[in-house]
Amino acid sequence: MVLIRAHCLTLSMKVHIMPGMNKLGLGTRVQVLNMLCEGSSIRAISRITGASTTTILKLLVDAGLACARFHDENVRGVKAAKVQGFDPPADPFAGRSTRS
Image: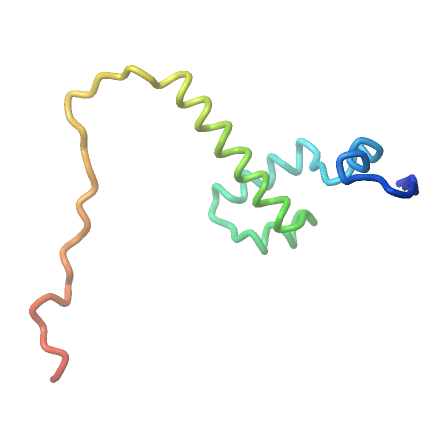
């Protein structure tokens, strides 16, 4: 990689000078998102792919925003006959004494 050295450059100018910096390839992005869906930890993904944890978290945010945008555009106006909620399980320790 060729680095251009210049004095008094702002961060935005540096980003424009080095356009390929901090960008994951399509294959790596797909691999990271697949591993996240499979339940792998961010640190494990970082070790396997070589991407930094910050980059993985930014990709996760971008993917979430893209999914939200897709959902908002395509799933609006759906009529539901019944809204089903989640009922947490009852407390298995309710009514038990802490002393034996």
